[in-house]
Length: 348
Image 1 (cartoon, rainbow, N blue to C red):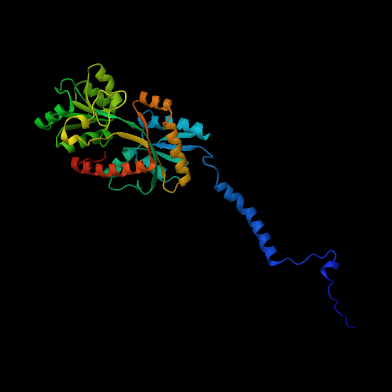
Image 2 (cartoon, rainbow, N blue to C red):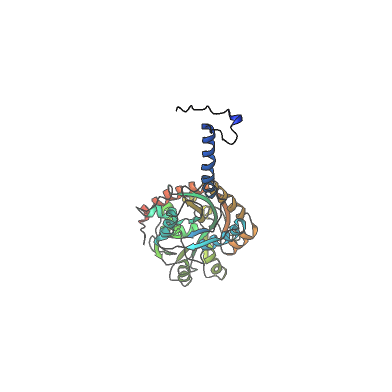
């Protein structure tokens, strides 16, 4: 017996039978399912920064100007970000150990470098480094400076930098000068002075500013280049004579002390150097995060209380944008290379 296939009833009469899904419907359903799986991942990658503590690597020991700068600013940023800013001291190899630690950290804005004048010095000083300061880092902002000064023992019969320069020319190699260490900013400040004036004095390096100043006060050394706040108290007691500050402009709170540029020595008319501190991040850090940090550091540095605390510690508060900071670092690195060659400076 032959069975005849019955045609399907029209859809309006099929009752419980579902219509066959169209290709468009299938694609739409797949897209919804895919979105459900992907969106949580996107949300996680686009978390609002900062969502956890931010670490700032300082390449100097605790208690110094760099450390104080990082902690003063870090306290304010902690309040603004509602996340802890953790300051870590990573010292060694002239600061290169700390810089390398930041270089190897993820470029996510959670590890920052408290950069200083030491970084362009090291670019000039070391033939090879495990990182490239200008390729592997992005400058964010400079925030503070530490003025330096040259001071002499009272037995040195000069009253200003012009007379001191004349003394060096009359007695080359007879005058001794102390600094806070080989290849420090203080050492380079005097070597730049020697380079521009074509004078010569005997360098006596110390391990730190405190012993350098103490021995100059004691008369063991003729002159010292140190941070201004370390020599100011000794001028007040007549144990040292401060001849000039190294910065381009006079220092607030010590405005009676002239600059090198004001010495009357023609070769020094463009002289100007100081120790500066600022923030950098690994290259590749999201631009919006870098911009946020720069903006917030600017806000912190405009706070009068921060300025007062820095002044009390011998620092000058200020702000320089990331773009300007990058240009300064490059310019200083090139200048330092000339001084390294001129003075034959080598890392310890």
